[in-house]
Image (cartoon, rainbow, N blue to C red; front, side):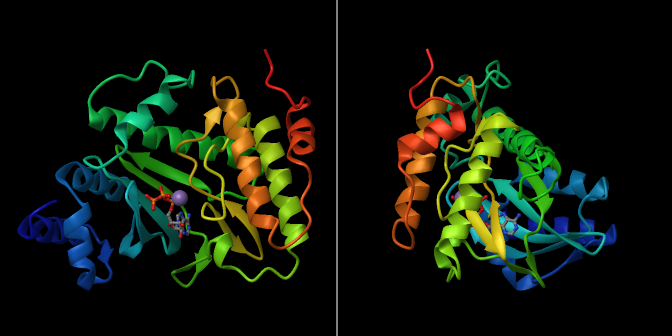
Length: 258
Ligand code: ATP
Ligand code: MN
């Protein structure tokens, strides 16, 4: 996306500010995912002292890329939403139904920036409700900073890759988190699955960009889909509860409210 010489110039600039660029061999990944907007946002976060080191890529997906980083020696995850290849149409729909972001209009760039703010806001609500989510640490344009879940630069594995000692306990914890998210944070995750739950001794919920407030017209449908995903995954490992019963427990009714 960005020319190598631009990236090298940028690296020199931020290294001059005392920021370490780890994994220089990752230059190729960075060339592919960084555009000028992203470099400016990164530069601003470095300037605000929210980033003190930039490491290698943890994940390179189609919507975004996650890099390891540091803030004063503490591990952070740097999530960068792609502007050019973002699923702009889907993002617009999720934003429109959410009161907090219903007035967002504009270019692809504006939508992606709003999406980043939305993930930050969702993480904050979940974190304040006491849920196990990465602590939100800041954002700028298309970049979100959060606590790194993992140790020694190795991220916690996704739930789908973990050999669960007590799957029934993990299942109960996750259902409980869905309920707290709905009742206390007043949000529906809307993309909950074994991919968006990391596991380090206990489950952590991640990837909250698409999470919506309870008044979103599709909130109930999203919640039911989340519950079905969790049931589908855990039914391979333990007994699962009836989805209608779960919905009743979370929402107080098993039917969509009028
Ligand atoms: P994709 O386009 O790949 O679907 P995504 O939008 O789903 O990207 P996330 O699910 O938030 O992005 O993150 C992708 C991966 O990056 C996660 O599965 C996890 O491995 C890693 N990751 C994300 N956030 C963190 C974090 N806070 N700590 C450690 N690892 C993380
Ligand atoms: Mn994800």
